[in-house]
Length: 339
Image (cartoon, rainbow, N blue to C red; front, side, top):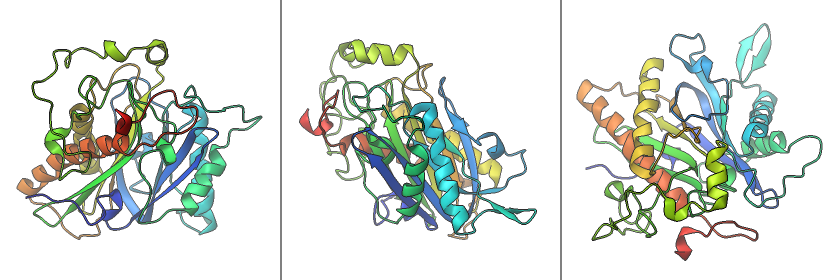
């Protein structure tokens, strides 16, 4: 029987810390995962409107084997500056790949669109994301906030505020897997207009309400959110202005190719938690990290459990992000707890 780690956070995976930084007036922020030691990494992009930095180097055939951090940021393409802030913080600590006597931190990043969420984006000449990235890196710790925090500070889903979610699973093999998601999708994480999450079958305990599926299932459960497609949501979809960006991590020993397979499997969690997902309007992406801290190289049967748990843990993290969102002045959508 699988169970959560002690915190039910991605930081239950040994060797990882997470930092958040956000600006309430801006209604946006940054989340970074810092690796205590370089971690094997991969990525899989399935959304039609991604915004990324340094993802090509994560492909198994390319030369960089391990990375130092990943960044999830709001701000659309402006938010890619956040990785420079994280990189600066790591460089100050002399963390990075040594190249010709220089230390170069390897910091892939992905962004979500939260420009039209009611926040004040009149930031002047330069956007604030580089400074937010630096702040997030400095705040990195084992414990961190969920919901309206970090990269989830300005996130929206269909009809509800989105947010930053995380979850973990300890497998029978002794391996831990964790997920982190900034949830800002075109689709909905709940069944029609109910409080019930699509990911209900994967819930452990009552980590996002313990409500299960509605019974009977609403007649409009399979409709594509027409009930929630107000003018704002329709405009978002037309411009590719959404995205769920995430990290799946494990303390198992993985090759770079296996890390990519882990990222692929974690996208199953998007499918289980969001309806619809991977649309042309979303930039859905999953980074994978393998710290190897357990020292366990999985046998084939245990590897299947790992990839299955990747999807389930990601679905839980997505749901927890929306579940934990809190209201703030100027919000366009309500929070789950008010439904």
